[in-house]
Length: 334
Image: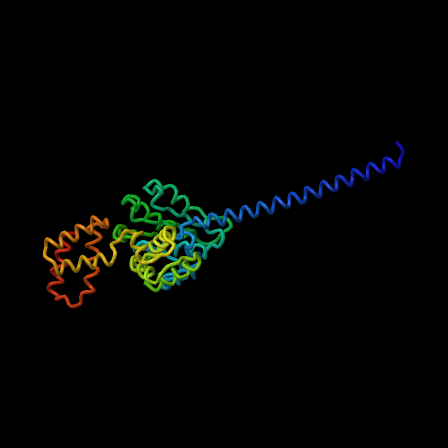
């Protein structure tokens, strides 16, 4: 084989290799594009199936719609805190947003969160909480944060063991104790914390947040349905979002009937019929009317009593002695 043939074969092999490399490069780019598209599609699918309570949970302190007096506390002087109040009023969201503001993207490594689903007996206080509180991060300054959610479910022994840990490791850590009933927290632990009460949210605050979610999720809701939703939420944002999501999944148009059917609460028209029968009919007919409503609509007696009590405010012309007598008898029945 002469020299010209050898050079021709080398050139052909080189061009073939270049074409193969170019094909592989295009193929790898296509795979990376497909991978990115699949990841974005998976994230979109997970967001679509995520409960709205978690999907729209406030991330920063500015996202919170209430309790501005509490959220304005200077983080540099953050004390041990005891957050208490009814469910769905923003206690956990507030302290998690505060942790994000304090520690930035690494907030999870500087925060320890224990919920009621975790074992929080005296062994956990002595081992996990004590070990986390007694150590410091090498490249981080300042204190760490321990969040004890639903602390009113902790045993008395665990609370007594915790009070010494709170005192001993104040230099390294801050404790945030969250509960619904402050009376179930021992006085010795209460005295070591600054107490913040989270009351039920105002109707305007719940409504403003619901408006944002209704527009984001394209919920077809009527004004009557929105008023019913605000009435049933009773200042509980979590309850309002759960009802709204359930109704949006089950009904094309979320109206007043859809709200009450989804929650199982007595409809206002049924309660009005009960009140009219109680005031105008004799005992036998009123009893049969209420029994028929319970059977046909599947209403619980407890719900009827609650709604009858709430509807007593409507009857302004009712004498005071009659009102007191009725409320006393409702209390006896309950």
